[in-house]
Length: 310
Ligand SMILES: Nc1ncnc2c1ncn2[C@@H]1O[C@H](COP(=O)(O)OP(=O)(O)OP(=O)(O)O)[C@@H](O)[C@H]1O
Image (cartoon, rainbow, N blue to C red):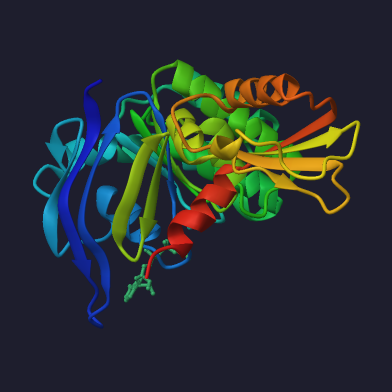
């Protein structure tokens, strides 16, 4: 699939000397949902800021839809919608005025029907004449998203979109993200809620200490790095783990009634591993009564990845 955002050799050293990004190379595919994960201070906001033309890189290059973000800023920026963490809009404007202004800012022709659609999509239609300052926090967040979408960007950046939002807004937001993706919008998000990334993202990138340490399809990442802990309750206590089961690294509880094994870390789905294990036990006359499986989450994988680094 052709990339819509191409980041190459990106470096950022802040005025105080902090090296926030180190030779970052990254391609975002057109139409995907890409989640950028990383611990605090990893460089996520810096990276998004550079791609959106808000932060000047020390060196390297970014193109959006082929347009260079520095040499051809207007063309590149008009393809991007950015939902920042905080609202910096004129508090005295109405919701409607804010959106109309935002659309014009990116050189789009006036289109009241489009503005109405965006407002309706975000359940803001009833609030169109309200001044921003009179809105609740959740409504202000909705305005931020509407503002980012009203010029019909090809790429939408969501920086911590669900931090501190209520359940309803979170649900609406993800429904909207799915709809946008279906319409062909590319979505790049950062989040501290790793389970959301696991559920939503087509691909995951992990950044740590200013370096991209991993980029992988979410499903492949879960398969390759995920583990399944299997706990098997057996009918008759065993004196020891039956021989010939070395491949599974099985543990036996002190009372001989519970076997435990860790599966995964390969290309084979864990379910197949569990079936093979049960067959191997049955062949050795071990009668399994109960089976419990616990899969590692993306969160476990993430903590493991970042924690292993010096
Ligand atoms: N304007 C600035 N001047 C100097 N240093 C900065 C500036 N902005 C960010 N930094 C530093 O650069 C590093 C990366 O910051 P950045 O905000 O990109 O991280 P982040 O991954 O977005 O973190 P968080 O998850 O906490 O938002 C941090 O160590 C931060 O202190």
